[in-house]
Every structure is written in structure tokens, then in C-alpha cells.
Image: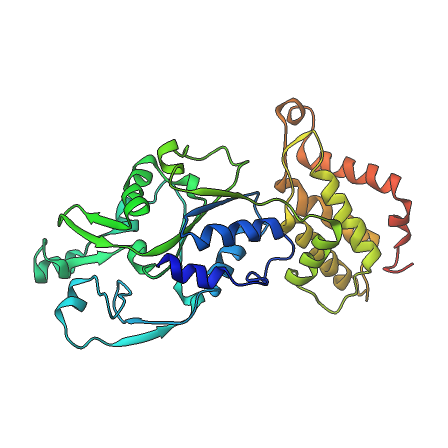
Length: 342
């Protein structure tokens, strides 16, 4: 995608990412990077909206007309052999969100998954070195769109090296054919800084990106708004003051010096949903203190990780229970919601 096009799209005033509440500094950095055609990696804890933000970038892209082929060729500048060979090729119009191609990072992900591979059935028909036998990978399916690489730090060093050329030059060399294909896309990766069980990203690979750091919601009020917007609701009322206490408890856990992995926004959403469900099962019309208490350990204990100095003395379940008991002791108004209302 040409820089002048991205300047027109992302240089507009106003919020181009309406599905993300808050995060104004992050949004400005994204727009700045997109205007100049930069590749980015969004760094942040799970559940804070990295994927949603990437999808909003795709939604911001205008509708375009492309050739109906596996490479999403621009009709005026086709890149694949079939489009170049044919005078008349079927065309189709796609929206911005249809230009979003996702890759889930994994150590098992191969270069062939990204660039493409030879289809054995087609190879028998057309020959193993025929371009008709080549099946393009995700990179070419994202041509003229967004290639979203979730948890990019989970891919192998071999895969990182395979991506270097396309990130730097905008072309991919298919080794079996010794042919270069242009690959025109916006690359958006994500990375969880607290995830240590991943493949290290080389400095050479990281040098192709700008990193945008995305944190937890800036305030209690914003997190409450996010929870209400994204959490499921049933015919059970959840008092605003009670929900505020729940959110406060989760946010205080994030500040705990005993944790090396903290509960994200999904934890807040989980408590919001499970508390309603518990009240519903008891026939209540509004959430009570006991409904929240019953959900605390189930929702939170596996979403945290204790520091080594703590984990051998206390289980995550016991830690969450004790922290909640201490929190309630300092906020006695919490227990006043015995029947779902004051």
C-alpha cells in the first residue's frame, strides 16, 4: 500500500479506532506509524485489546476492487502468473475488515505456512516446478491488506529470517522457483512482555518494526466502560457501585509486588459475567456479594502467577482468597450487598 494512500486514511482527524476505549496515546502512535507505512508490533498483556486495535486498523481501510485470485492482485498491477497470463480475470470488491489476515504465532508454524508451498496434487498435474502447483501462503493472501501476526514472539528464528526480506523490501522470494513476488501489506504483530516461554526475537528482526506499548485501561471508569461494552449481560442487574468495587479489586491485584503475571481485562469481564450467572442460578434479580465471592477464585487464580519467593509458600487459589478477604475487610460496604442491593 502506497504511503500517500495511508497518509489519506490515517491522517484524518477523529477516532479511527472506535472499538478501543481510551488508549489515546497508543492510537496516536498507531496513526503516526501507519501514515509512514511502518510495520508495528503492539506490546501488552493479554486481554487489553491488541487484536481489536489491529482489526480497527483494517476497518479503517477503504473498499477496494481486486482480482478474484489467491494473491489478491491489484487489477492494474497483477503479480501472480494466472492474472498476468489472462486478459479477462474476475474481479471482486472487498471491505476493509475483509482485508484482515490472521496468523497465530506458534513454534510449529513453518515458512511454508507463511510464504506458501507446492500442492502435491497440482504438482502431479502441472509439474512440481510449475507455478500452477504453487499454493500461496498467508503473506500473499494479505496482499493489499493487513497481515496480523498474533504473538509474533512465538515463531521460530527460521521463520523470523524468512520474513526479513518481505518486511524490508516488500517482496518474497519463492526458493523452489527462484521467483520474486511483490507483497504489499501492513504488518501488525503483537507480543506479550510477560510471556517467557517464547522464542527470542532477534535484533535484526525487531529492527524492521516500531514497537507500540499498550497498557491496562487508564482509569477505573474506563475499565468499567470496557467491561460493560464487551461483557455479556443477562436479566440480572449489577449495581454500579458494586461493579466499581470489583474492578477496584482487580486493579489493586495488578499492583501487587507478589505477582509476576497480573490479571487483565478479561478477568474483570469474567467476574462481571460469572457474578451475574451465579445470581441468576439463585433466582436473584441483582448481583449480591456472595455471587462475586463464589466467582473470585474460579476467574482469577489461573490468570495470575506468583513470584518464586511466594509460590512455594502459597497457592494461587489461597492467594486470591486471602487478598479478597483483606480487600473486603477494608471495604465493608462490599458485604452490605447481601441480597443484590443495599
